Length: 322
Ligand code: DON
Image (cartoon, rainbow, N blue to C red; front, side):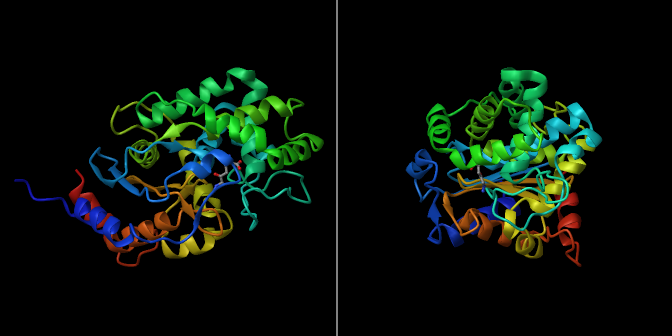
């Protein structure tokens, strides 16, 4: 029997260490999300060369939620160029919750594309060009990154659409300052639909490894994102990906990442690994408790922190993952 790979061994060890961690609570402000099984826990790692290491509930489907935000941001960067996008969405951490009803006081732009205001603005830019077809472009792009045809969970979509009044408040504020065109209702429906795209941990690790592999899906070998877009997506994930908990995340984990209220987190180790975790119980900031614990241990054990002084991760992985 072939010897178990060290990363596979580690992924299983992390699962065993944290599968009984009960901190946090499943999101319920979108009613349909509260139906998630709090015990689910999956960890998937895909190398930029195409090797998979996974354990736990990695086939369990969940909605992508805010993890759609860096991907749609990448799309608008590619379509409109950095200069045009920066006129509408800044790249500064807000230090506020993801759903805060707040714009920059000097420019009236959203602080960054990872908070709801910035993400709705990015979707508004797509809508301005493609109208209601925007959701087809989004589905197509996400599917290319995941390497399979993704679908929308219509129940989660309706659930968010019928309760998303806070996002309506944000969108009308954006309209007031001309950050989105005068199609608030339509833009929000596309935003709610993009958040309701179904993925599992395996898909999310593939999306993540596509970003790690400079935009090329390591499984299908298709180019999904341009190198320029990847650089800007990763930068903003690093500074703003876990909302008002990003400082601690960067300090302890040191990997550009994005979380979602469904309980997923994906992290990108540049040129090396795509990492995804899923577990629906969330901490105070809206990030998965088991996911954070898993990332912390993986980063420490593999030396993945961007400023790990041993740089052990890079050396270890580059020899191991050919
Ligand atoms: O806009 C919302 O409230 C959700 N569709 C997405 C929020 C989300 O995932 C925030 N992440 N932690």
